[in-house]
Image (tube, rainbow, N blue to C red; front, side):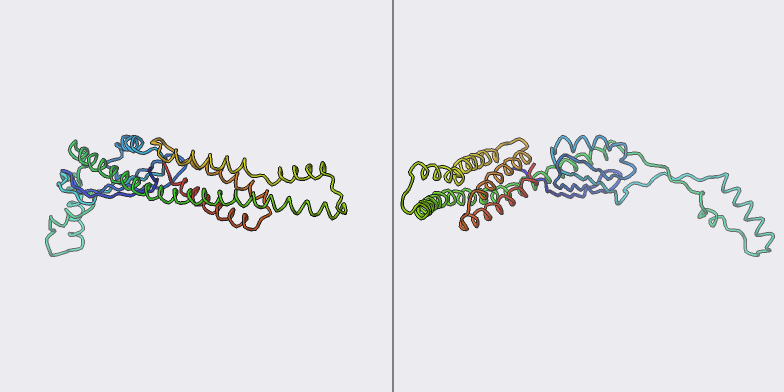
Amino acid sequence: MESMTGYAFLESSADQFSYSVEIKSLNSKYLEVFVNLPRILRNEENEYINIIKKNFYRGKIELTVEIFEWSNTKPVSLNSELIKKYYKELGEIHKSLKIQEPLKFESILGLEGITQREKSGLTAKSKKSISKTMSSVIKKTIEMRKKEGEVIKKDVLMSLDQISSDSEKIRKLAGKTLLEKKDSLKKKLIDITDGSIDNTRLNSEIAILADKLDINEEIVRLNDHLKKFRSMLNDKDQKGRKLDFISQEIFREINTVASKSNSSEISHLVVNVKNHIDKVREHCRNIV
């Protein structure tokens, strides 16, 4: 089982520069891919997005590539026409201001626009290096997601065990409560009729009462949902949304049980079951 939460970060060096690749993964209803790239890698954006989509099926995935140190020197060119123009105008200013010191040529080289560094393109070696590092980061992210997924699975199974245990307690208490209600109803009818009980009416009232309080169908369906949930936990396909749907069905059944019961003991157990269902649903929202 795989969680949608993961993180990985690696630094490496290519023939042109040093760089880092980072992937953050968060939960989301669908697959959302965001990439943050330096200008030199903008042309690779679609390729990187497709690589992410091939490896992740659900979650908010954010890829960040940063270049922090160039290892090769970019070629430099001089604007000779601009140098001549600066030199001529500065010479005239020197002359008009009657400056005694001679005009130094190196002072012109620091002026804006004199030197221009050529733009560097991404080399095949650099591209290959980034792709290789990205594959490693993706692998590490998936490993973290799977590791967290196993932790979630253990916690979910503990909640399912508790739900199953409490539902069995509820079933037994409901049977006991029904017998008590039957005895109470019989006593009331005896009091009302001064001991002259109409058995037909008594049986009819008991049947109505039993129908109102019977939770056997709900408990059977609840256990069936629990069984299906456990089975689906081992599926290799995407299962987060499916498990969330089953959790809703479990909640619906226990809600019906609560509405049929007047027992404080059952009410306390129902609250506990609902708490565990909420916990399971929260986990389901972070499962791929």
